[in-house]
Length: 409
Image 1 (tube, rainbow, N blue to C red):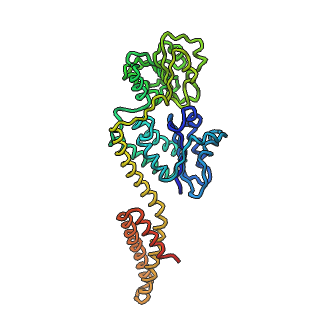
Image 2: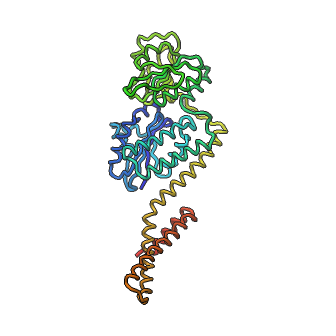
């Protein structure tokens, strides 16, 4: 059995390329169902966020599997030139990557904790669509455990790091203060709520667009006003800052909507969606500045963050070793079972010779042999698993291989 993944992220591709391969929650579920049906795939998980897309699979070791081709088939893409933007990983390399990712160590904003929730949600969605297997279940659960440990034990970041927090800090460094600004947030999903709340905490006068659903009143962050989504263009000229953060596959702000629009003051637009919410050409209009997901990246690390990274790496190594102990043990169970059966047969053959010269009723003889079987199995288990607990993994595997040779024909 092999663990494989393919991924594209903010380091490898710009937002427009990433958008081609992004999945909505509904589409991700359907895609995992389709993947699971492919010959040789035991389980799969799709992780699709605003910064990355990853496909994970456990599959037959001998199987020649192109996850890139699987992805292109799912998306209806026939252009092989995009493959250069992807990275593929297998086995320990892939596992290491996932555990680092869960700890926020590969995020655009170092230490951000949204990715931890996204990893858990990806596994949950896979489970709901009957696409996960035992290996994917344990792998993603243990990655989440590593992420939680890093979050609680390592001071990688202060507060609640996210793209909107990084954006506000970056704007402040450029002399742009949110306090007193009229702000509109398009979208009231997870990202939209975080953006609205963060802008409000920074002193902005925040209005959130909402859609009217049959399910009733839509909750918005405290201290924010609301307007219907269809009124956004009427309200936009009053704004200093507009953030759009929806899961819509279509633009929430289009170039044609600005043709007759009159702006009395400079307007800052912030597009925090993948695929894009705001048509890029709008940023070329006079008086408008447009930022997207890739505009607020920072590559510099303070000495404190560097030390935090080392501490996090130690946690990752320990958790990865624990996962492989489980995985190797899982693969060893059938081998240990065979050793136990061979050893019990060997003992029975030796005892049978002794019992032939022992005066016993047939019924008593069978009961005795049955008791010997049970006792012998327990002794063999105790010996083998005792070795496992007292030796390192390589030495234990050598012992198992040696025991197997004892009973080779």
